[in-house]
Length: 528
Image (cartoon, rainbow, N blue to C red; front, side, top):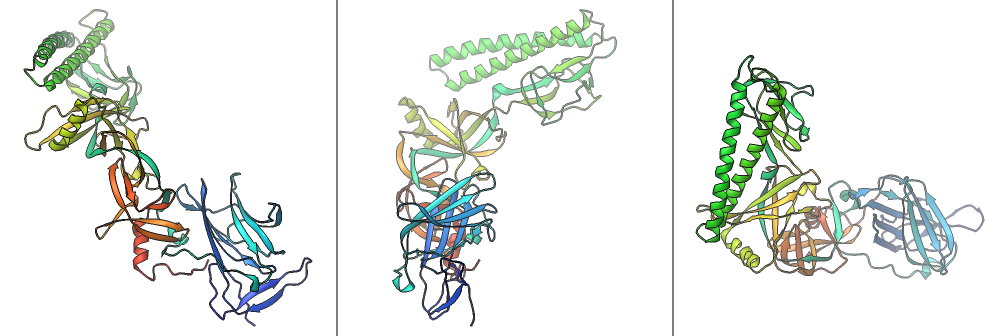
């Protein structure tokens, strides 16, 4: 006689042999019994906060060996569980534990195979408990009925129909599903954008006088070095016995003072003209920027002059090494000098950028600008967010950052591109953003509406039809045509085709589609 061990993922065809194990309450020898009939299988899929449980097992019969195939997936990263213990408990109607079996580890990656032999017939429930090596515990359960004999078996619940995509396939690729839920969304304009330094948090450090560049005790900084305000970046040693350094500093102070005076006059003039409607508002913004730059320059050279005088004790013929200090906190973005190189007054030697405070800028088409201006004129606050590159998304769920102050809203349209700049401040608390990085800006308008929504990654264009792939069980997926609505920040409104709580594929959806196109891509049965 050929003896085959039944496995839930290996359905038994008609007229095949089924091994039945009759077990007495004592430790009597196991008796092998032949059965020539199809044996019904039950499939259960459950999701908890941490795991996806996909369990296959035969319907339970007193004395018959029931081998479970419990596929356990950690939702964080959609990884197969590699270690831990699994307990299967058979509970009575009152919730008391009638039988219990346990396996100490997965039989293979992600799959636990406990074996249960029911001892008594009747209604009850199953409870599966996972205990991880770090103490984590997770459990699921469902109602069952233990039949007194094979003849007493009812029909198994209908197996879900759809595209087969096995757990072994899912675990080997970037894959994820999420439940469909309600999300507050509003109409938005989405445009490509770029990250730039904030003009108030960029500083250029110039040589205060003629001399040779010397290295401070801390060493010459390199691009990427983080500095604090007041840190010494380098030293400039003026020529021995020369008064040129002192005179050049005096000249720099005088020039900076004159530039500041001029900038203040231009600012006052621009304010009057804008108020009178004679020039566009952008003229005043430019005047403000020029005045602020002039103030910063005057403050810097005045400070250098004070340090020079202090170091020389008022003696012009002394030759101290002048320290070049970082005027702001930030990252050294550029070093334009080498050790021992002669430098002249006013030459930019270092550029420092504070990466915590940045600006996101987009060029808005003229037609879209009119829509935003209409909302802004109506008193609405235009809220914008920045969607990060897809590499920063987790499980296909868009990652985005809020913006801050609206710095500019299309003050002037470019004659050639017919676009206008839109600029918002943005805080880089995560440290991920960098000047020059491409992102997407979403400027939201109107009022929030509560709508069903899914990540953009879940939605495919299949021959012109908007489609998603719904996970109906652990290894079965349904292709679903949906009607979409507004889009913003990497999310899409679903107006028809999905219900709350259904799970859509956000990573790997295209591979699920390919599995549905090929009858050999995922067979109806598989072995573990």
